[in-house]
Length: 114
Image 1 (cartoon, rainbow, N blue to C red):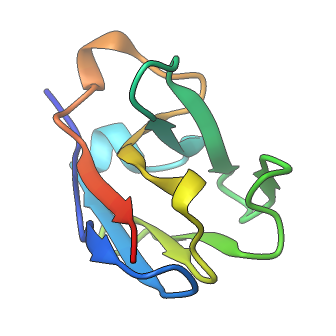
Image 2: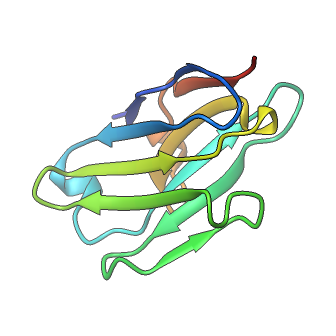
């Protein structure tokens, strides 16, 4: 079973995108979930995570610009990304936190460029 992220694309610096990740209830419900990203030549890193009580944790590089949220009725995880920077360019993935290997999907490409 894989989690498929969507919503990526090409955006200019300062722009916004909203990513979504919908999965099954048994994977999502009452679980800590996270957004991760991997830039070319770099290791995959945690961007933000959220628990079942909507408590959130963000990487310092995205604090104040990104917002993670969840809809437990739709089993969907979201990442609202504002004021995007070129260094946000990466493939973005969703997974549980901590991540499980079998849940990695193909991710969605986010490219920030003028």
